[in-house]
Length: 490
Image (tube, rainbow, N blue to C red; front, top):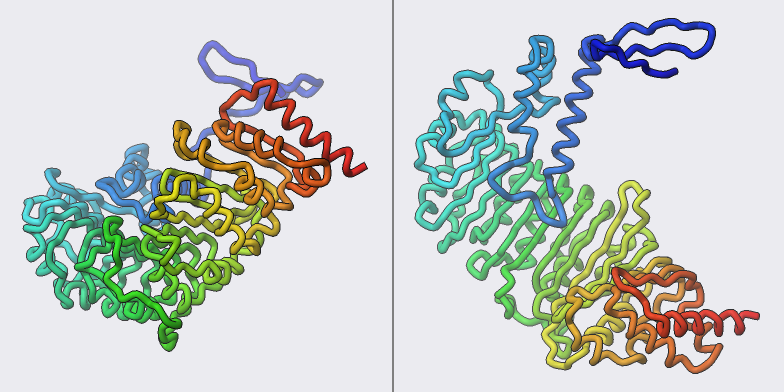
């Protein structure tokens, strides 16, 4: 079957054999309403997938809550039939009216059907915002970017009922603690809550009433808004529908406000079972994370991302066994990524991309250490404690975040690299930052004989360097390594 273009711009299909039957032109109008609805719904889901950075970056924060709430109305301008299809399924298509400052909100709300409202506000007293707030029973999502002078106005506003609200995002820089009455009974249907730099230490008491909450993101938790592990666990214990959880402390808060734990583990009477949790992200002190992981059960976990601040190797407590215990629900991993930076080390293990859904564990530790070149030794210590996570790894990436970081390459020794590589026995493919090729070549050159060459990465088949050309000397050194291994195997 081929297409023959015509002068009028319409293409007709024709057969090349005996039967030259001309097919009639088919337009999109031939599709039934249900198929059109599925196409529209697919566009909505695809838009949310591209624009919603739900997790690992945290629930998306910004003045635009995705493309779909602002573009669906273009469909109803095509023809009367499309308009009918769209308005006949407002809930399935997630139709919303998007409101913000300095737009004619009253005229917009009068012109459209009574659809749910998404409101983005920076100034609560702006006329357009006040016009939208008159329809509190229709507001399904609030996004606030507020300042300190508006704290009292916000506290008063949020004591009013919002019966249809399912999403609330607040980014502020409040200098006083929010009263306990805020959000008390005003948001009975809340499903997604994001608080950024909002001191709300009584939040756990609110969580006990949010039985439908599925996403909770607490960012930039300051000393003023500190919530103890005990209180946090108590609040989380009521969230049986929670799927995404982010807890992020303020980075400058180097010394934690909670007391140092020197003897034993705290009381484990309060526990939380989160049967629906699939993604957990934590940024803060290791001692706080230990207390959380010791008291929660997450049988459906798919993604775990951890970043530890200001870790002192000589004195701080950080129990990797707790992470390994919770990562068992993730299954086995086939790929590992080891990253070195000036003051931190990171390791990430993940499953094949074809796994649905692919499960991931990522751990970054920011180390306060005055010993130059400590990174490789510290990473070896971490991987030694994490051997159960590495037992199935066949692909290993070793990356250097700063390619111009010459001190790192000079201060690390061959024996340190060999000690790290020796932990990855099943690895078949090794990829390194191009800046590290001299370190690998020196380490391989220092191996003393065929036996040592055979024992290091015994399953290794391929070595790749990223964005870097390998000179003839380095190629010969790598070739000699594989030659000695082959001689030993024979």
